[in-house]
Length: 281
Image 1 (tube, rainbow, N blue to C red):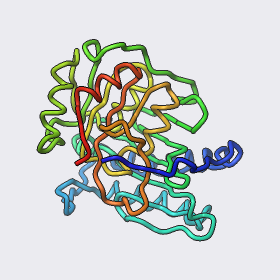
Image 2 (cartoon, rainbow, N blue to C red):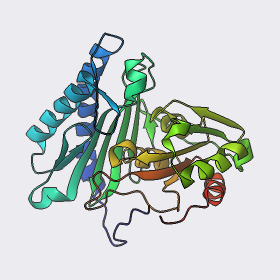
Image 3 (cartoon, helix red, strand yellow):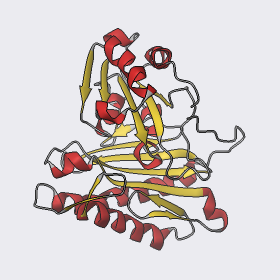
């Protein structure tokens, strides 16, 4: 499904972004105090309406981030996985914070440090700032529109990979694909050099750091991918939907699921799209 945004949508100034970078870092640190406290401890696991698991750590981490945002930028909109959408007001309605307190809850509850906290800031629907924080490993990726992506403060970049046949491929699980998506993904998997599973958002971090080449996924919500857009792009990679469309926060798009294709090299990304051979559904 193509996520369309007005071509004339303007971007915020770098000065505005500087202000919100520090706020995003604070949000990540607040969430980390919660998630690290609960990691590898006995926590109750509930099942949400979509059959995905959720823990007290997910809920408390999002609550902690929302408290900061409500205090610091009360006019901004918030869209979080656990507590839904809060509309913005006035000029603040142009800004939406998109929060996933624990992306990879299954990894979290089984003791694997491959989950992450995702924080995105969208301006008029376009993601302009993204944080991927892995608090156990103390790794933090920061992507900002118009700037080079950093990991723990150091600039990073994707690596060259001219063809899918040389690519190390990630998807969270082969079970995330449904219907025609299965055959589409299988074409990419079969063409890739090494397919791997189980990293959730962390896969996009290693791609941005030049350690993997392709991520292909489906059934993602905006809080699963928006933060990753500026991170991948700022490292020199390409990330779109399966038709090559821009990934944005659509008006009224809360709750929709999307297919995502990311690659560190634009040549490989084009080959991935051709293999997916996806059409608007």
